[in-house]
Image (tube, rainbow, N blue to C red; front, side, top):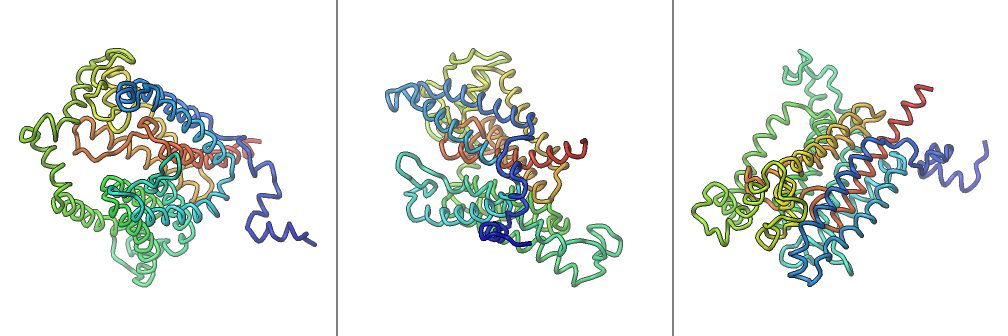
Length: 415
């Protein structure tokens, strides 16, 4: 069969099978409606709380009580466009191009920010907005690892490796064991470790921890050996404790958390104390949306890391539980979709995104309630942020793209 120049070029790019069925090239048909509704509810809920929490702080800082909410709405609209664009693309495009290009761009930005990011070295200013490369790296790392783990499945299969057939059993084939260890554990861990080193150089411990955990979730779900993860868990715990107690900044955070009575309420423990007051003063039904007092320059930047405390104060236990339920529904739905995906790449992508959103939400709520030391973790969909919100919505769009493939295949089977 003779191919035209355009057809040969398209085939060389690996898009031939997609181009033959143009209806699957760029369409929202078949996206999971349940997940879409959950995402939109989280976004709307978060935007309402940014509006309520940011007013006094924005007024005192910029003389405009709507400063933050106007920018949040703009970025939310921009992010929704990115989300639906990402959802409209086939998962094959994300696997073949988004993973490689996106990961490469994020890695370059992580290096660039070390030289242009100022004293904190976390943001790159681009005209009227700034971008945090570590936030972009999280979804790109998920895609890259998902693609890698799918590609090396033939090298990490455990058939014949163990005498008893159990993950912790005696090794029968040492060569196969070493091959599976290299491809399934050492190489992907080296990728994650390299990314974490770059983020750690930004003095961003919480971002490093979240990124490492995201990578571990994808690698483990991809079939990495349990015995290596058991050993890695011990090494990780040792490294975390070394960092926590080996650096003045981190050890002080631990000391403040364990012994707040030793520090000044007007200085070191101010933020967490005011946040806890906000959480406790809400009761069951809260003071009412917009009626909270702690956002009036008591809780520092109430529209950002500690926005959950304002939710508790103004909407009470009911509002806090509703927020937690929404995140639980997001994670649960994503994991259910992951189990029904047709390829390992799609499944691991869904698992990684579920792990990212769920883990970050858990850590933020734990910080606000003083369950763990203050680590500066934002609450997904709720905390104010331009580039972070856009990246999160585009990441959600990738999840919907995986959902779309699963839904279309189910419909074809039913027909």
